[in-house]
Length: 226
Image (cartoon, rainbow, N blue to C red; front, side, top):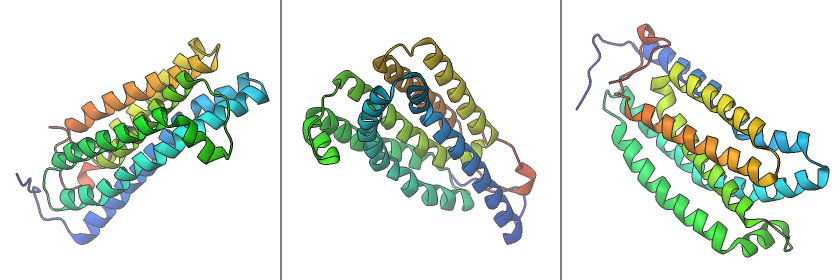
């Protein structure tokens, strides 16, 4: 159903509101990348160069899959913005995007696990020894993070402060997990994957509450929840 604004919105007002929304997205994305890099920072600080280098090599495989999966967020963002400007509900884009994301992620995760030797040889040019439990958790962590990024592109325009608060909560939660579980690379990867999964589920729940409306100046800093 179309959701009509209460009063006509001038192009200047609309442009200003959308510019403000872009600033919210920028703030949330910056906080997201800080959270997504927290496990790498912990490994660099607490582990030797050899162990940290080994973790970073394995993490690079997850990061490649993250870049592939997160591209859906760049596709969904202009569609959501256009629908919001027209006053239409955008949740159908969330459902469709989530279904496509699950399909793409399942293919990437499966290929990363079943063809891990080929992936590592392709990335590094040689075979390296790897703990595949760590690899599986890192791939899972980066896939969940890619979904979070897609949800940010979808919902940050409407959630604004709530999206920022959700990312702050994820940052604190992952920091607590890493503080409690950091005695091995496997524990670090588990902490990252658990925090990413919890963050993805919570942000999805928030996004499902959104009933999108055209942003206006009198909505500054607000949330658009049904």
